[in-house]
Amino acid sequence: MIEIKNIVKTAGEKVILDDISLTIESGSFVVLIGPSGCGKTTTLKLLNKLIEPTSGEIYIDGKPISKEDPIKLRRNIGYVIQNIGLFPHLTIKENIELIPKLKGDKSEEEISETTERLVKMVGLDPDEFLYKYPTELSGGQQQRIGVIRAIATDADIILMDEPFSALDPITRTQLQEWLYELQQELKKTIIFVTHDMDEALKLADKICIMQGGKIQQYDTAENLLKHPANSFVKDFIGSDRLWSAPEYIKAKDIMIKEPVKAIETRTVIQAMEIMRTNKVDSILVTDKNNLLVGILTIKELRRNGIQDYYIYKVMNKDPLFIYEDCNLIEILNIMNNQNVGHIPVVSRDGQLVGLITRSSLLSVLSEQFLEMEVSILG
Ligand SMILES: Nc1ncnc2c1ncn2[C@@H]1O[C@H](COP(=O)(O)OP(=O)(O)OP(=O)(O)O)[C@@H](O)[C@H]1O
Ligand SMILES: [Mg+2]
Image (tube, rainbow, N blue to C red; front, side, top):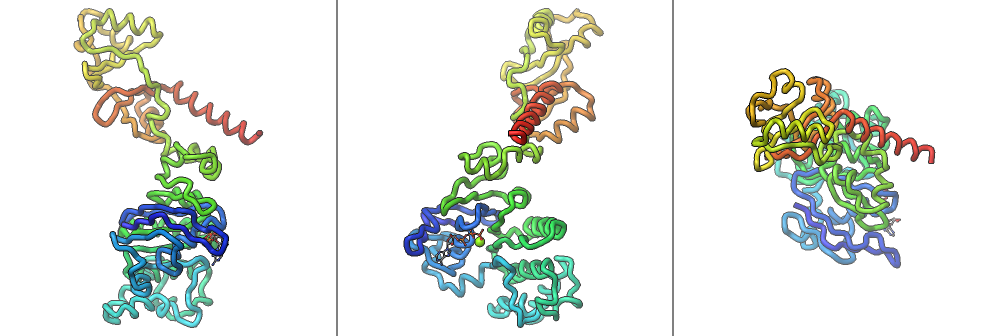
């Protein structure tokens, strides 16, 4: 775990970082994002002691890094610097193996094997590339090598400063996919700087939005989208962002929160009266603890007659439902595949919490499109 505690960094009169505190769990992928000059690169440089803070302390696994030897520390932290930073006079192989060899805890053979494996992993042919010099590679190929070099150090922590910024969109997307998979597999702690919110949303477990040397919000993508801490964060993310990421829209955000319902021990006549006064053609049935136990529809009653006295005797005891954390795409799929007009929403412990109907869904969606149009026109 990395704990950044009350870090202040000044340069003369200028405050570069203004009391930054941040905790990064081991094995998580954290993205630092914010306008140019907000202090992202400075934060990375503090982490591997390329610079010292004016005040505050950084702890790695509980140990203050101010007491660590910077060279030793850096050998255990991979660093992909802004603008690649491969050594031009070294071959690709030499670039990648520089730190592993300095460390001296592995044989030449082991190091060589790792290099080949990593180069293959980023889709490059070792025979073709290992003995070339950086200038003989395209920008995208060089960036891949930069990332590999950071990983080859065997470091648990990898700092990446805009590693994909100079790439065309296709290569960039490929490398994002690759890095995401790599992270899933190796579970490194990655701190990744970018200017690109799409990139942040794609990769991060948590996103740290910075501005003017301060952290504006440090949160999961979902919380940033739904609960921006202030107007800077909101504008920075973009107001229509949530709707371009439908997987972040959950059933609980769009459901009707007070669906028409009845307890199972009511009579059928009472249930029909409730439906009639609420102008609905079905009613959700719960037990006395508000657990969803069934659904009663007018259609069923008409078909079977109204002989039975209590709801629980005639209701459909196996109602279709969705969980409140289902996302919009899943909801639309279920409603279309099952061809239902409405679907109850339950919490993970089975409590009835809401209802989604086709028309509630439509009105939420169209409201949003209206809002987007207004914001485009305005
Ligand atoms: N050694 C220094 N002396 C004085 N000011 C500095 C120094 N290093 C950085 N700064 C200033 O500190 C601020 C933060 O710089 P930093 O490089 O951390 O920004 P950044 O968020 O990485 O920006 P970018 O997105 O452009 O890379 C900037 O205003 C920069 O000019
Ligand atoms: Mg920078």
